[in-house]
Length: 351
Image 1 (cartoon, rainbow, N blue to C red):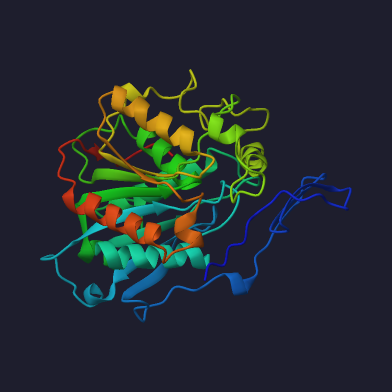
Image 2: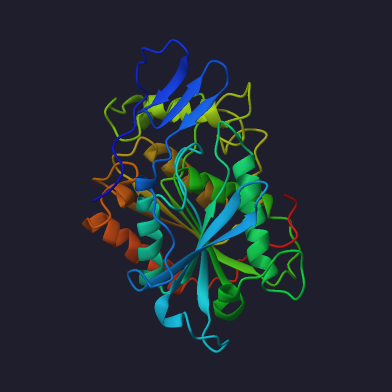
């Protein structure tokens, strides 16, 4: 059963509270922040091969608090050989830029299932959260994580290497995957890395955006018609942007609005093939469709899959429902069949 319950912006009897998200995240007038970190809500990495997949945590930058959780199908755990390398998925979790981590059970279980279903190494990135660290902190952290991954594809480098990646990962088959805020992160990472020289050894073959989190000052129809008791409500979405965008910015900031005049031009970006998943009852569905239509008009390769009966984050709320199983099948098929020559190379990217 999912650990999540619907998150709401609650009225508070405490006059010092500015924001209260279901008691999970509280922002006070003096600038202090409370974020629930109940150890019962989190799970530890396991080297025993949980659900046929082993996992472990690696700290990349102790000062920043940047770490990743690696997942490896257990059948490959002891196979220190280069003869059969696995595709690599770099995963950016959701949470409105303000909540969650790879250790949250829903995301841990999602990545376990992803590694087992696809037969891939998965790297889940624990990036810094807002409002303590507003954007672009999450983007910078995820680019640093990709730099660390890419450093394994060359000799030398400034990063400490990991044996799972050294001996098991196929750096010619790398994929980015992000859900909700993580989909937004994946989009920005790809756009920021578009100018890297083509000789880089690591190749991103494709990207998967699951219900990506975009916004603007102007409301879409699906936003205006969103019921207040939806899993992702308009009030909650707006709060996420208020807490994560640079101070003084509105939702037309390029971090939020991919059509902002200051945003990178989609038509100029050498994007890999994309798979975009949209929920038919998700408040963000219109933005997802508009984003895909813009990419298609630019001549980009985009596959769209719509789960008509699903709200936001259905894959975490209902991991064993038909839609969640179909999403996993779509991701697996996309990765196994992605043979396009349109690739992006990521290395030496300015953080």
